[in-house]
Length: 121
Image (cartoon, rainbow, N blue to C red; front, side, top):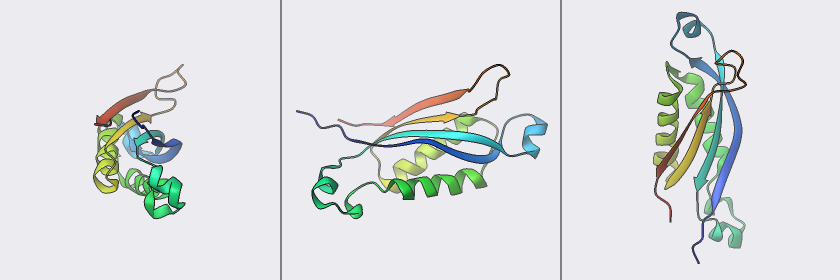
């Protein structure tokens, strides 16, 4: 039986400079991140020790810090960099990352890109 465990962060909202229009370059807008990260939680489940798992608070704090300081034209670019950070710095083998820009299109609730990177089971 294959084991597939995930650590999930949903609705992580961060304000940043994002957009291609001049007016967007002068304001901060909200983006929202949803992450599903492959991680074997079996050791942490046995030891009940934070050092044996993926620390979702550390991941969140790192992404918040990065996104707040960033300035991208496209959410595609920002999503790719966030995926690179999570996989590289936290050694996550696979992730699905949804980067949303609420209210970006008039009449829509949300627009987003959804990417998957890496390999898992």
